Image (cartoon, rainbow, N blue to C red):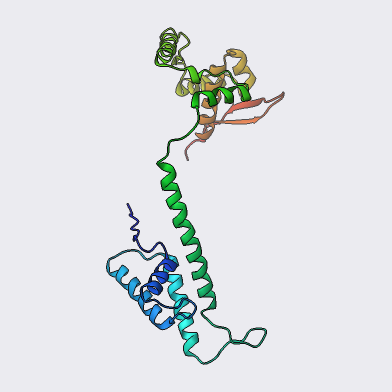
Length: 249
């Protein structure tokens, strides 16, 4: 089982960066990347020492800070379309300003939600349910439901359950045939003739279970090389022949 530990001050990496900026009274438009990167990485190090899993967004922002720091240390300024130098911190500053704006709005919404939860809801639930039932044309009596009606319905359901006669029943039938019995039957039949059509077994006893057991017995005899089958005349018909035993040398 895993547990998620949420620090109360820092909901995310930008929340942590804003904390550093406000704590040290830094200019958000001129962030000292070296210092804020050091503080950010130091915070992540403390999380690892406490064996708290560091979220991927914190690692991404840490990598971004280190990238910005390296760009500022290397004297190779990038220029925009107008030939002006591009500040590597520009994108980070824009994200921080957007996060700060939305964070302030979320705080106001949270206060409004808390104030709303302390107020009593308006409206007449019974009247609204009646109007909804009329609008949807549904015959519902939920608005007039009471304990007595619930008990009456429960009694009727239990009475129907007790009087139910169409319960499912399972009957196990022991068939008077076995595979071994039908194997002997087939061998006995073909001992008087050279070959017998399968239809003759069906005509002997036109019972479905008897025919199935006989067919399975023929398959086993075929596997044991005691009989062979050949294509016969008619639809789905075949000849069953007894294999002659090869005398031992």
